[in-house]
Image (cartoon, rainbow, N blue to C red; front, side, top):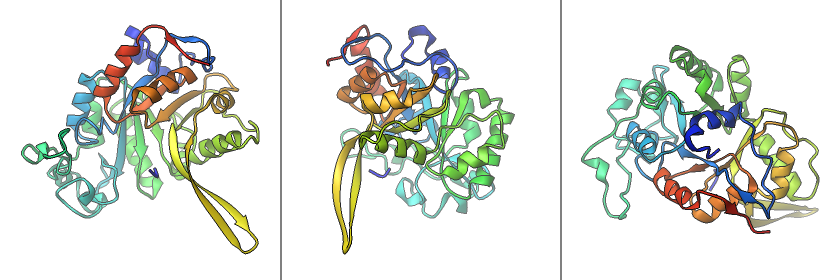
Length: 317
């Protein structure tokens, strides 16, 4: 793919994920863990409902997700809307780029057209369509105490950053929003807004992970108060250069390990999110590593997994 469980204080403590409460320094492998990672609903919970829709948001809240991760693009009329792929045909009953339609037109597109039911045989939202919502609608549907991560898609970055910033200001939502993107251009664009909380660039996170995993040392730990996110596991291609060519090996790598977490936590108040954590084994591993949060496709499933682990969790050496 290319691509602070805190009991009754869960929202306040996740506000910590991207600014305040002290984060765990990484659990020793033979210690008991009493604070489990927060559950962030990936695109509102793509495993439970059509992704990035108000329906997904409603269900994620109902299933006790701790935070919401939403994907943003700009409509033809410059309105931030929630949608991830390049083309509407990937998920909806329409085709063409998001930027080719107005926000009003996108609201009439069925974003649940290709959502497959759990049974794998039916498409429940073809009979009850759900439209592509605006960012403003989403913020109003999410409890004001719930943190939101906004994943920026599409380029150029400048116009979208300005449009998102305008909505966050008008909705008084800067304090609960954090910005993420795989495109470094968004870090530069949001630098114009001092109130913006932004994850470090994916390039910086990836480079540090790889250097530690290749035993090159921790030479550039993130700054204090930084936030970083990367997949728990990821398929990567290792390229070896020869004089007359190159060799390639496909590797399934585990990126978050005790060594990489220790590097990222060299400075205080650094917050870490493990992406694509969707089963009990990976959630337990994330907890034992002292990750602050996990990004999960199904809040319903992960809430059950967390409930079974609530209490002291013993981490094996």
